[in-house]
Amino acid sequence: MSLCSVSSKPTKKMTARIDVQFACKDDGAPGSNDISNWVNRTIIAVGRGSEHEVSVRVVDASEMQALNRDFRHEDAPTNVLSFPAGEIDGLPVDVARPLGDVVVCASIVRDEAQQQGKSCGAHWAHMVVHGTLHLLGFDHEKDDAALEMEGLETAILADLGIANPYGESPQET
Image (cartoon, rainbow, N blue to C red; front, side, top):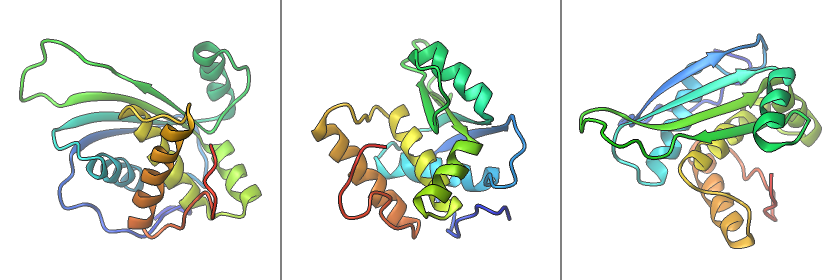
């Protein structure tokens, strides 16, 4: 069990195949079982019943900064990025549908958890849920969309036994 584990029972019906890659060593990063559980809980919570594939890559600040610079034109590391796969025509019916990739910066998540007075595990769960919701088409660009996404995050995290990450008044992450 890693330092960032959140005690929760795995879902009975796992819907996604999760590939978790650790591109950096960080003792605070959760294990692949926790990450897979958080992704699956998110997919189930929004009612996606078919098989999916998701990759989650845990990176250091320099890799995250390069990705953020290259894809979002922001030359700084960030906590989580999502890269939706989009629709792929011609896949056989029995093949899992790729949702995309979630990239999480271990050091940023660890530092944010400490700065915000949150447990590392709870903040990791929030970032993975947040990134997975982006793969599923949710965003926080407009107020109503942000409230919907934050409501989903809060409900999914509550199901995991994690307090509302936004406190009493939701705000954008």
